[in-house]
Image (cartoon, rainbow, N blue to C red):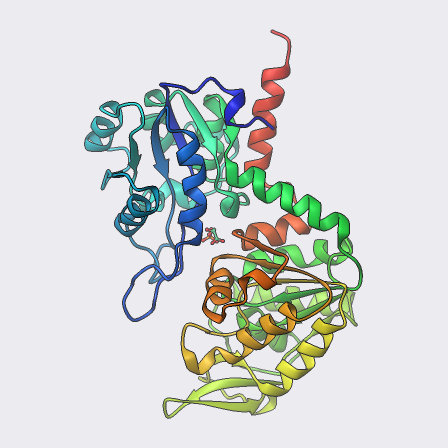
Length: 401
Ligand code: 3PG
């Protein structure tokens, strides 16, 4: 795929799609860490002879992390050591005025792209290029640089729409992530263990059988919300877990366990909140209304033993709500088991990167990718829309006129 040097971008208005989506501190609403923002600065610096319009999403509609990009603009200003303009708008008249008035070397950050309805929906590249978001903006841009590796699995307008209409190349993070992944996958050895946690169930469920079929998961250790789906699918808990399309997900988990009987490990015990304290109980004692915030100590021991005897370990999504110190034990223990194992270790996503930072063991992991759900699908062998968009433009360039 093409990179920044392949397009003559000097003096041009460049739309740079990055992913600065960052977990927030639950009590203060402040960005928990700046890793993805730091990674975005590399492409911004390398576009310093252009007029750069940066776009990113933050959070999901209806969740606590769905906020504007003011904090990200401040962080970028600090990290780059130069003033970053903030549009407080996406494609309205004031954003357009700001874009058109940019001078060479200036950087403008648009507000959270998911404040527009279309950026929450998936489209074909052709349909994405006809969305209002893309139609209002693309005439003000000369080129598009795609650097949102953690959002590579979303066919959103900002990922596949601009790239359908404008000269498009990969940003530095996309190149770095693909290079590191290719390198690490050539040295990785069996047995492969995948640890799945966190709250995003659907992406991970979608990828599990391709992960197993692609020999990337001889064992799958389940934690977090996805563990509850499998516990329900194996009838170890009987009540509603409270997630979207729950019945469908539970059925899928049941089928997966039938198809791959020796692959999945489910928690034996879990941590719940009782009178403001962490209390560990066996899964059989879970009752309707209990909220599971972490895996329990017996599960931690069992999973740690599997991790230590694996050739390659991949973790996506935190095993517990580590942001709350009462529920950090599972996440810290399994990450430490990975850090001290002899296997090749890959940790994926913003929350886990923040957790590694907090526990001081980031350097002990072989590859810490900025991507969460996108990486699970990538390892599962799925063609990601962002990569397809980059390859499509390169192919278009190579075609004889
Ligand atoms: C991520 O954190 O995985 C990416 O930013 C994509 O976010 P999403 O899962 O809300 O689309």
